[in-house]
Image (cartoon, rainbow, N blue to C red; front, side, top):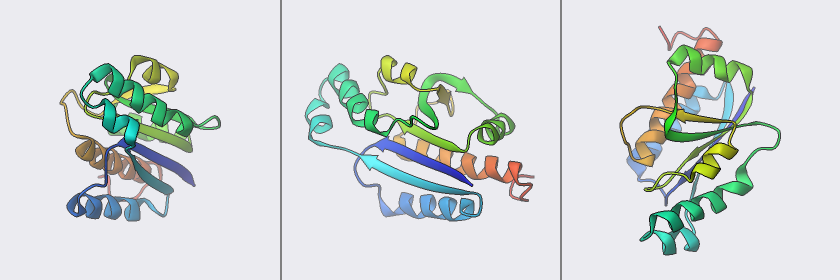
Length: 153
């Protein structure tokens, strides 16, 4: 059974997004325990007018969630692009994962480099809400590929 955590910078998501997240997590439940956590604190809030300070605040907030016994993946536009089968292989190789989705300014290079991998979901820029949705769908798809579930045809 996979254990997957998704951390993103942001306040509580709107109900329309939450419903989609919950559906994808529920669909994945037979293959993985997936938890999502939005993080937003006073330090992040105070730093939003300065990109460097904001990225530092994101890094400081995410650091306690770095897995010492798992595989850490930063979502980053300069990261590696994988197709669904390569993503499934990544999931096959690692059963305990943490994904990190940055805020409006992205992630500090040092934080990205401290992770085991930088992953790009697309060359397009997207909000953390959409990135989380795409990631959750690809997690379900990848897990479906691994377990020969008919979702991925």
